[in-house]
Length: 331
Ligand code: NDP
Image 1 (spheres, helix red, strand yellow):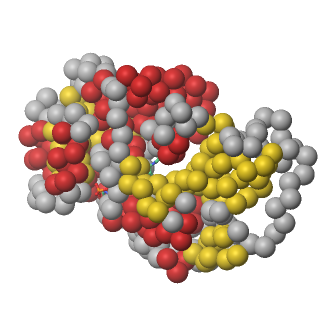
Image 2 (cartoon, protein in one colour):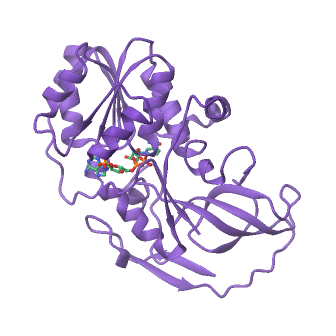
């Protein structure tokens, strides 16, 4: 069994040497109630960066010299647990290991005949739920309003924008390459998209794309992009603070404008969002996302990297925007 441990707490941008590959020779004989799993797909996500540092957060940090874990889809190789049988596929938070034993807790059975297995880590998994619940619960969208999404070509952002279109919003995406900007408009139906890497004046570009101002901002990135959005918000705007990838690797406190005057002037709401706080709403969200997917109203894209040995580099590539849609490693 191959395992990936966290060797160092990354300083700045993580590097492959922060991880260690080891062979785990432990016994794989299962006891009553247990199942043996073989990893099929591994989700790499920006939030894992936070768990690699030891700063206080909403989840405890990863322990050094212990396996990293994230969302995984795995095949049941053997089972002594009544809820799962050999050949089933499951999803859950599992270790970065090629094989592992589980007691079944926290695992969900997933059906590869209903949707491709990898989608249970993306549009039908945590990132899809984040998009749906963040936009609806905090954004409270009303048809005709204008939605701006940052990190728009990523796993969460690409779903947020499409839901915005389904709900009748005017949707503007912000992403890092011309190819992504084109994809947002042609594949995902965004009304407009802006490449933040080639646009000098983001404040003006957002104003031009949103002549009626911004009612909802779904923020995946923080930093200067989000500052530029603030200048364009409308009265009673809602800002969903879902992530801040632009500052995750900072080693010094970021320079940022003061948000208070913008909030006061516009009676605007800015609220942090963590998907796990909305677990009671997962079933209804999953139902709607699967229906939209089956009806073709919602689509998705994935960047699939092959090979267990490439999990750390796929994770690091998120910080260079190498992915379109959900970044997934196929084992
Ligand atoms: P993505 O698929 O969006 O991948 C990350 C993307 O971030 C990259 O493709 C890149 O795209 C962009 N990016 C990287 N560096 C920067 C930067 N300096 N400035 C602007 N954009 C940058 O990841 P996810 O969809 O999984 O996650 C998106 C955000 O949502 C993250 O911040 C994540 O932490 C957060 N999140 C929060 C959850 C919650 O419950 N609060 C749950 C899930 C995710 P580009 O080429 O456009 O730069």
